[in-house]
Image (cartoon, rainbow over all chains, first blue to last red; front, side, top):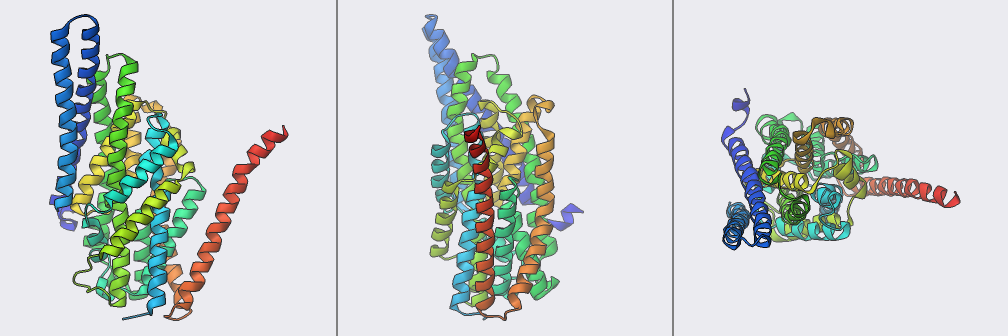
Length: 79
Length: 372
């Protein structure tokens, strides 16, 4: 019945884009915090190599968050 | 073509006043969680939200197009009907602000316009099935539910990924994240809410013959003035509602605030892209409740959440009834500017009375405390 009332495609698109972006960005930011936090702890323990790996993971995750935000805004502005 | 230049000026002025009250009323959605978790100082958060609301209004015109073309028939709209809808929306915003209820400014606006047009032009001028139901009411149900689910899943993911880390560094990290997610939410608010006013002004310009009904795209001055009005309203702030949204639904930590704001922004931006004029209030309320319920169902004060739901349910029919009544009263003075002038004075007086009463109530406990 609902399908007869509305064009389902935009609504379905809203649902999957919201789920993917909301969960993706949140998870990536949590990974960035995990990376930064673990990097500080490991650096303090003198485990420089492992600390560097976590720092890189954190930076990449933060980069992914910022890229996703910019991409989302550009996509919206282009419509 | 109906009405004169003065009537158009009054309608545009009332539309921008509505936009101001919308920003004033909806500031809570954008900054409440940041203020509640102390990620940002209140005044800084409000200023930040105002700037990003302004910027957001320029990003897209999809929602303005929906309001101007898909809810009511632009070729049969009259200036007085637009005026009636706007006054109803302002009155409803003021009433719910007075009682501290975060109801939807958007649904008040659409309800008011539909009610006024129903009385002015009859049911044939309203696109009930494809417009009101398909592009307003169904997204209105989907958006808060979706925000609830996304925020709930997001907070579970966050606890899974970062739950075993030292609380201090995690809290600081998510407070930093709230600066980003709060900014994104403010931007999203500008993309959706400022555009509704642009759509309504476009309808007024169509009614006056300044824009063609076949392509009622708002001109640049409308975009700039609507963006400015919502930004000024946001900066003025609505502290009573901030209190309800930020702490009375449930006490949240910075991770929950981040999850709620991120989920709200994702849903609003995706909906703006599709042109759905949804309620930012409903959406962020759903996200706030979802981020609390996923952690612990009992953490949510369901009584307060129930009051908010009641305000949501009431908004469309109440605003529609007020829109119909306002149109009838305004029309009783003829089709010229007399009716809008009288009704504008009345709504200004009513608003001033509510502000005075609220200020008096706010002062009373302080005075009692000083006497004690």
